[in-house]
Image (tube, rainbow, N blue to C red; front, side, top):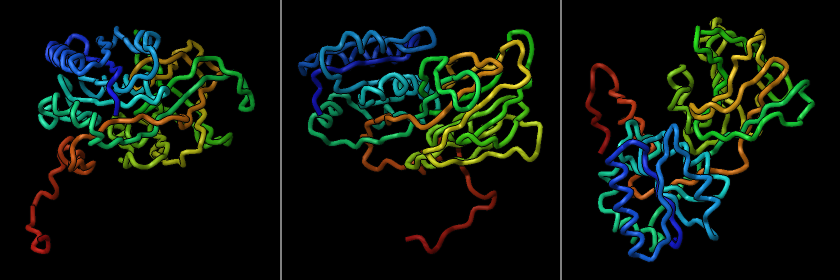
Length: 306
């Protein structure tokens, strides 16, 4: 890997993340890299400036923060095929990030990257656009939105909790009407996020699939469903005269969806690319550690495992 042009993003408002970013910038500049650095957060999006200011190819994005910072990087950088080294500095869960303890000295990280001693994990993403009128109308009403974890269609109001009614089509065929708090359409990566909290399935991120999960449905028959990656999920808001229904991308507000409009959600044409440095990287160990799986209440010794 070349490190001629690198962007460094740190978690906004986190002093530890900022100090790590400053240290990384100094080390990379000593190696001759051109470095662009900035904060990422609810009120900070440095990526448009980085992408506009870059002269030629950006070789690497170093993202220092938690899963939210990594999700923002994937949404902004995947379309430009920029690999992401996400390190948990000031974050919490860390499903998407490398542990800073495992990373250790960043100077050794640059040596490994320059020597091509790393792996790249590719993860499926989603894209969405809203449309007006019948299913056959594909003239867009909105920009294209991207998500690594999930698209969420649910209402938002500053004054009251709203129950939504959403009609769902899959590949142009009406499947169900969900009444409840909203609907999640997630990737396998996002199956361990909001989706698992809504009792959706955990799906290995090596797969490509769309997971449709109702949020607190007012029907026992409304269940999650896993779809092949070529599917298109269309969601129509019903009975929402005030226009409270919104599209959320990885928890970030995308756009409003008015009655008579629908949002089409499908697999994106590009993949997010994450740098993996840990040689014994294990998705199942991540699940055990992050979800604190403890096994049965009575633990038995496995005499057959050598």
